[in-house]
Image 1 (tube, rainbow, N blue to C red):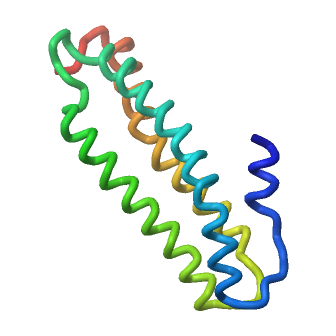
Image 2: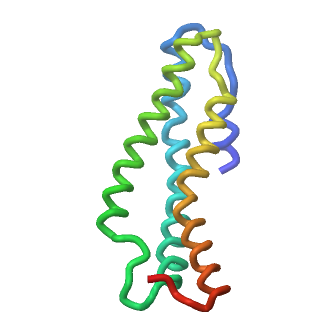
Length: 134
């Protein structure tokens, strides 16, 4: 995993805008893999903590909404990733903007973790109030 992180943010001088696009695209799978790990953890928290926070037989999140939202989220996430290299090529200075790539990854992971965090907070509220949501 550390090799993937080191390779993902290796900075190098690039001669053309096409080189910058290839630099970003070579890191897209690593970006998506990191976000996927956080998404799975968030989903597990949503299913476990969310289910514990509501009355038996109730859904914390509607399953159909969750699955359709996942598809939309993945598409928007990759559109935003593409906008990253669009911005870098418009503001071309001969090298990739590693800080922009790192910031985008951190923001994507935080946004992806929010549903799981929300479920844990809801579960903690039910523990402290001794009343289930629903």
